[in-house]
Image 1 (tube, rainbow, N blue to C red):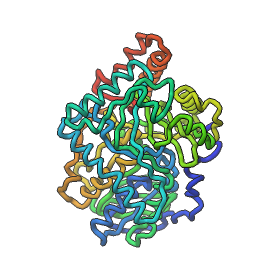
Image 2 (cartoon, rainbow, N blue to C red):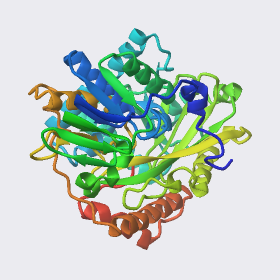
Image 3 (cartoon, rainbow, N blue to C red):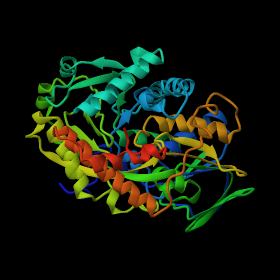
Length: 468
């Protein structure tokens, strides 16, 4: 199936766009806070601000419809940072790693409590996050995660699994070894963004405007946001634009966009049962540009690949939604990693952009000398951390010096990415080299020397690409 032929299945199943659109902004308005972006981060932030200060007047401006972008297109993996501690230690101190991971422990209970309060079924299922190895090189990454947890004094957060133990959770001849993180769940992402949207619409202190593109932001006292048919004056501004933030000059050298594509099978509950994959585990492999896969309640299997094209200059064009090669790579991963699904028919395929930071850790901050705040760089793991970022943004907006404002995500300095077009050309070269090397390794061949050398360049420059 070609990507873009039909809408992402998540959106159709959730009937997200059956509801009337929120009115586009017309005329000039004044509010306390303007939020740019109606995805997870923007909607969570608006709700968090109203919970902290019920008297605030907030406007949320979404360029399309809430959920049409990455928040309605992702794999629906809900987790924090325990699964990342192995490589987080290369960027943060051990104290910061533990602080971030422990803050992430609050994500899942908060999302569950929100859904229950709203009476929304978002398909939240806690099955843990399973990372598997399919090559000798990936074995080392699995072991690094286990060792990191031991060294940090939290061995229970990364439990090593043998080949036989893996087979009890998901049987595949390709799996060599693995690690289980208890911090892992899955949701139906479009149902979650729909629940957030309905909560925002029900709040009389928040005005949601869809089909409202912010064409210019003029920081000042007040800040002024220009749209095609009106303006917003606001004391505080939150930029929560996810992948679109790559085209915003203040963040352009700190972000790049990758495409992430998924394929979804027809319901095959009998084959899922045959795989013994009945515990609801969210699974990834340990590639640099990983495969990620999960099941749905009716027995469908989703397989994603974070190896899509790299954007140019922040433009969100068809390479993120219509790239046939990326879909073929995702389907190849499905057939290769789970050969028991060889006869499962793929019914849907879609893609979307992800915003990748230079070190793959999100960053939250305030533009110097302004009251313009931002959160970006979720690097393929935004479903859960968007809630975390929203709490932090709410603290920055309300000038609270609390636990959220002290998180390691706040005010981080990162090594800048190269300017365009070097960023696009260099990133594409590294991507191709990494894919060639890992494909060769999984096929039992020695990776080409040149490919290995090129794939190592980002680390030598203090950068990290990929979404592992």
